[in-house]
Amino acid sequence: SVRFDPAGLRADFPILDQQVNGRDLVYLDNAATTQKPESVIAAIDGYYRADNSNVHRGAHALADRATVAFEAARERVSGFINSPLAKQVIWTRGTTESINLVAQSWGRQNLGPGDKVLVSVLEHHANIVPWQLICAETGAEVVPIPVTDAGDIDLEAFHQLLDDRVKLVAVNQVSNALGTVNPVRRIIDSAHAVGARVMLDGAQAVTHFAIDVQALDCDFYAFSGHKLFGPTGIGVLWGKEELLDAMPPFMGGGEMIDVVSFSGTTFNTLPFKFEAGTPNIAGAIGLAAAIEYFASIDLEAASVHEQMLLQHTLDLAGGIDGLRRIGQPRESVGIFSFVLDGVPASDLGMLLDQQGIAVRTGHHCTQPLMARFGLSGTVRASYSIYNTTEDVDRLFEGIKKAQRLFA
Ligand SMILES: Cc1ncc(COP(=O)(O)O)c(CNc2co[nH]c2=O)c1O
Image (cartoon, rainbow, N blue to C red; front, side, top):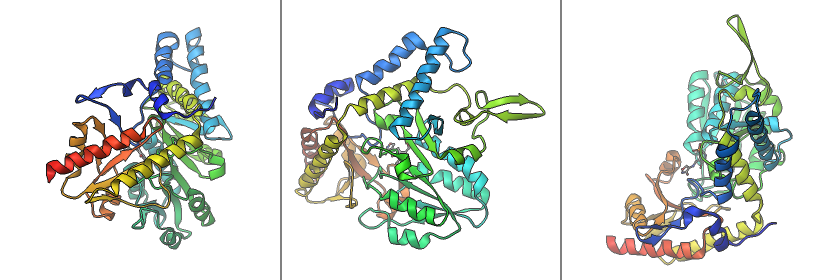
């Protein structure tokens, strides 16, 4: 059944029922990580209580049960992002490892002197630094795609940067710092027109949109389980089959091999070629449970609710002198980044925490973006399905209290 009742949903998340510094917790740091529903906690707990075993090649009941659950989780992720085949879903630790895998494997194989990798200035460091590392090694060049004053990717500049030396475009579907929703289908089509591949960073998108990698036509897609009500330490790299098949392994070890000998080693097929060592079995099972939970939410209603929270935020922000939102993107998810004149972001974050309000302050792993706006950091409130207008009201009570303290 699909339902959406934010106040009612809170009962699904045990962590939300607590006080911090004597006040009911107001958790507004969802872009950093979302909280976990009881069903995810129970799935992980249940696995360790009843089914834990190492996977594949097992010769006993527990190994069979663990393997079935682990591969069923992969199938569930495959359906969630509409992958043609489950073997195109590679388990990683998260978005960061997924992007590093593409940079180190596909990048080393396909980049050379004079080649260019276009990276938007909106990017998280996880979608900047891996490209800098592989370009330094291969002689290719990272070229930034500018961002407008509104916090959108500058599409005109992007199209001017595109030429046949561009081999890969790395962009996020949603900005973790500003909330910007990028026109990724247009970016992908333009990149493909010059023969470039596209690495799509979906870390912030998966809890806001239905993901369809076939409709997007991206070449690689990455996200983290912990952003989708799942556990930390489990993430996904999805790739087009022909690209993954052609790529060399990323890490060596057990599972990713066929035959090992000192005269030479052959490798396993997809997805195992990229899954060396004992995987995060419980994490995969927990992520599958998170996807099941997320599937029970009316996504359209959740999006309407989130936009209402964002509009309520903007309305209240408009009443506070000296509060400046960073970016006014054409389209934004429920992420609100701001600065408050006279109150350093870190101090404001601390004062809000003293009132039981959890936000994130600093550069949000987007230092080039902060520099572009002449900032060292911002205060960021980021909403999810269990936040309410009362949470937003508490946030602005806290901001006004902090402002009085600094007056
Ligand atoms: C757009 C984006 N890309 C990549 C990552 C890296 O994900 P990880 O590998 O799971 O860490 C994040 C995490 N963003 C944040 C993590 O903490 N605050 C944030 O805004 C992100 O928001």
